Image: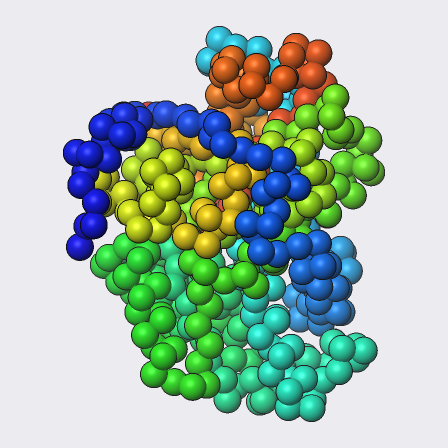
Length: 443
Ligand SMILES: *Cc1c(COP(=O)(O)O)cnc(C)c1O
C-alpha cells in the first residue's frame, strides 16, 4: 500500500521521530505566504462565501420556525465570543509564561441545533442540497419565504431522497438532525469513536445510525458505498466537499462583525491569533479561509491536533497530504478527543490552505482533559475534550521566538494581540457524560 519508505521519510523530516513517539510538538510552516499569493490555490473566493452567506439568510426564516431555539437570533446559527480572563491566569501560572494581549473563546460549542462547529458546514450542505432539489422540482424560488419548507408537502417531497454521511459523531449529529427535520431519509455511518449519547439522540430523531468497530475512514467509505448504489442518495463528503467548507467559511465575516460590535481591533498593529482544533480539516480549514478573507494578513491561524491523530500536521509537513495516514507511521489514531479522531487529513483542505496557515501543534489527551476541568471550574463553560485542543495555542505562540521574529511580532504588537481559542463542541453533552469528563480531568 505505502508508496513511500518510512525510514527515508524520517531522515528527511526528523520532526516525525517525536511525532511517532507521541510527543507534543509544534511546527510553524516556513512557507506561509500572504493572502494574495495563497488565495489562488484555494480555488474559492469572496463571491463563493457571499453565496453561502446569502443562502443561509434565505433559510433563516425556515430555521427559526423549525428550530425555535434559533429564533432569538432570527434563524442565523451563530455563537458568542467571550473573554476568558481566569483561564488566561491559569495558563500563565501552569506554563510559567505571560500571554501578551487578550484571551477570548469562540463558543461554537454552544451553536444551536447540534452543539458543535458542525452546525456550520453540515447544516449548510444539507440546506444547499434541499434547496437545489426543491428549486429543480419547481416547488421553491429563491425569492420565497423559506418558512414554507415546514409544510408537509415539502416533507413528503424530501422523503423520496436519501442522505448519507460518515462521521466520528458531530458531523453526523448536524447532518442527521437537519436532514430528518426537512423530511429526508438519512443514514449516519458512525466510527467506533462516536459517543453513545450521540447515536441515541440521532435515533430519537428518526435517523438510521450504522455503527462500526473501525475508525472514521471506514465509516466514510461505507457511507460513500451506500450512496453509490442509489441514485436518489446524496453522500456528504467530509473529506472533499467545497460546500461544507464554504458553510464553515461564513464564520469569518460574522466574527468580523462581532469584533466590531465589541470594539476588538484587528489590524497590522493588532494581530489576531486563532487556534482551531483539526480533525479531517474541513471545519478549521473552512473557518480559517473565512477568517483570512475577512481579516486578510492580520489573522494568523494555527491548527491543533491530538498527539494520537496528527493527520494534518503529518500530511502538510511531509507534503504527502492525504497520501499518508498516521497509521502508516505507527500512530494509533485513538484519542478521547472524538471530534479529532481522524487518521488521514483532507487532501483538498491541506493543499488549499497550507500556504495560509501559520502553524500546527499537537496536544495530549491528558492535557485536554485537564483544561476541560479548568474551563468548567474557572469560567463555568462546559466543553467536550476536542474543544480544548486550542487552549494552549497562546502559550505555544508566546514561547516561539523564531516564529514571532520571522513575522515581526515585537512586544508592542503582542501586547495588542487578541488570542481566540475556537471551542468546537460540548454544548449538548449530557450531564452524566460531562461528569465523567470532569472526573477524568481531576486525575
Ligand atoms: C469535527 C470537529 C472538529 C474538527 O473538524 P474537522 O472538519 O473534522 O477538521 C473539531 N472539534 C469538534 C468538537 C468536532 O466535532
